[in-house]
Length: 80
Image 1: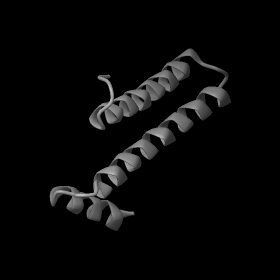
Image 2 (image 1 turned 45 degrees about the horizontal axis):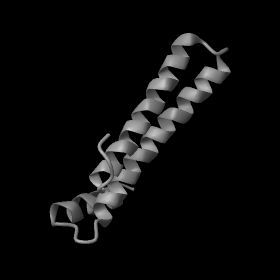
Image 3 (image 1 turned 90 degrees about the horizontal axis):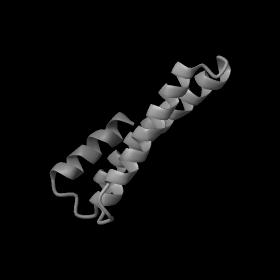
Image 4 (image 1 turned 120 degrees about the vertical axis):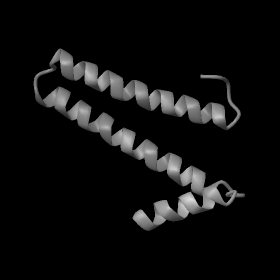
């Protein structure tokens, strides 16, 4: 994975004509955030629906949504 991330960075720095590096890096960041959502959901369900854990889950989901909206905007969609 380290080599793939380094190559994606190199592609992006060199213009990335087919946007492969940029897409790979964006998907990698999205995967990290999805893992955070899954971890927050697991803690929330495992430890009795605690309000603080619910807030953590909501924040993780909101960050994922914001990332998706920003990516849509970057690709020519409507403003976030």
